[in-house]
Length: 57
Image 1 (tube, helix red, strand yellow):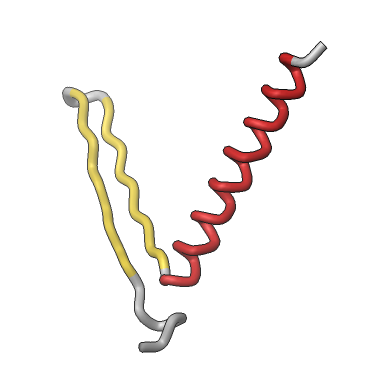
Image 2: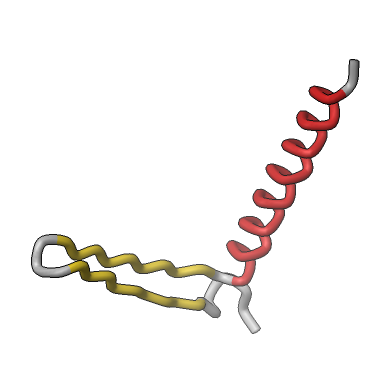
């Protein structure tokens, strides 16, 4: 398995009436999924630390 060549792709289309239409497409490699997971984990952990520090007096 080549981590940079095996890719996951998905797309979605959302329409509301005739006035609004939106299309989204994403393309990730396994390495990109790990990087995104680490980024989200870091954001959640840092926000928990900020909230805990804000509650202390």
